[in-house]
Image 1 (tube, rainbow, N blue to C red):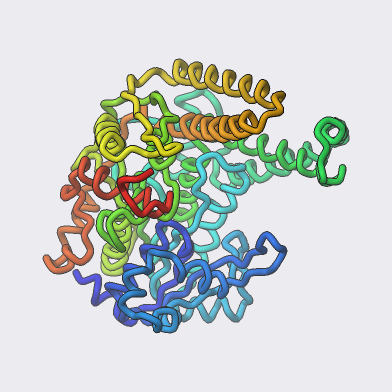
Image 2 (cartoon, rainbow, N blue to C red; image 1 turned 90 degrees about the vertical axis):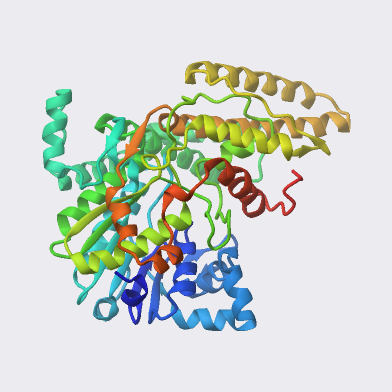
Amino acid sequence: MSITDFFRGKVLFITGGTAFLGQPLLAKILTALPEVEKIYLLIRGRTDTSGKRVSAQERLENELLTSDVFDSLRRLHGENFDAWALQKLIAVEGELTHERLGFSDLAYQQFQDEVDVFINIAGLVQFDPPFDDSLWGNALAAKHVVNFAKGCQNAVFLHISTAYVCGDKPGRVPEELPLPYEQYAVQHEEKTGVAIPATLSDEIEGLLSLSTEIHAEADSPENMARFQGEAEQQQKGVGTRKGLAAQIEELKAEWLENRLVEEGLKHARSRGWNDTYTYMKFLAEQVVMELRGDLPTAIIRPSIIESSFSEPEPGWLGGFRMCEPLIVGFGKGRLPDFPADPDIILDIVPVDFVVNAILAAAEATAKRGGIEVYHVATGTQNPLYFRGIFEATYEYFVAYPMLEDGKPVAVPIWKYPTLEEFQRKLDSRMRMANLAIRVLGKLPIRAAKRKRRQLALKLSGVKTLLHYIRIYAPYTRTNFEFETKKMCGLYDALSPIEQQRFNFDVSRIHWKRYFKEIHIPGIKKHVLKLEDDTNG
């Protein structure tokens, strides 16, 4: 098995190349597999804040290629980096939610004639989005890309899912395809006594109909009258530069988003999943299974992806993931405790291990054909316990405290209360902060206004943390053990040289060292933009 030989001369098509996982994947291919012929990147054009249209090509040049993920390549190629990279990377303007990806019939066919490897990374990764956005961005997008890949001459298809498609049932999770939806629906009724749509298409159509109903409800005369009344009150109360019509539209949009978020969570939990994201990823896997035909397919299921172990550099991170809001909140003294089970395994995997496993799976899938599932996870081979994350993080911030007003921030020792106890404490803190803000707001002195702004900022941070905690609580109180025998088989099939070049041996990770020497310094450098590890 040789990843290098397999990718030589290949034409790749990648969705989600501008996202957290896509960026280091591209950097790795350009670094370790420079003999690929070219990489088509599906990038959506967008409109910026000034109303100017930004094309896919502009996004490639001004957003992706300026990312620090390419720093080592930029040092290697110097001023020629952009020109060199643009010989390999080709922006393709398109839209995953369109049946034919937004392409003309001619372009669609031309791409299908060329593409050898299709890697589908794109998807809406928010845990609690408006459910119709997640349905289109995950399940229906999967339908469109599978149909495209199936029409290619001799392509390999890799679909990036998540290990948490297993639902809310704790314990051992097999590294295999889920039950086909129709069998799942029968099993669900036997288990709960509640009938659900019998086919995958019926389930998806039901969700689309629910979205249509909620949008119609937002436009109902009763709701529009209420939005108008609230807008008029707001304009009288505090004054606003917005016109009445704009204020009404803003209230309607807020109501609509809240309803779609609530209904998505409710629906996912009724089906046996913790959140909208993981349920929609389950539906996406079902779509892939149902439509792929004889297309050689790999479903890659990473656990919680965090900063890189070594590539493109230790600790590289493209923004807040799952752990970062909690680690930063703790370091800034805004997270006095956490409602987790300290003895639970929290399955985290560095992003470069996921990248390397994807590349290995592509070669194996081309050779083997069929459809296979690979967990890219650490818990069964090299378990990380929640208590270990806390200990490493505590030790780091005791040694290198964050600063506030020039003074080091003290960090607490967690006692791990229940979720209910924790929420009561945070709610109490928020009530006290709100009261202080109101009192300070009535005082005319400048110092009071400054203190009020500081309190408001802290309150906003606490609200954000509370949101993250409510969403992530199931993952910090439930033990999942993802089998990784097939992932290990991929690694073992590599030559010793390629095992070094494409490392995803999770047994090599020393967790305390990873957090203290790699991950937290990476957060400070790449997310908080603090170069000096000893300063907050």
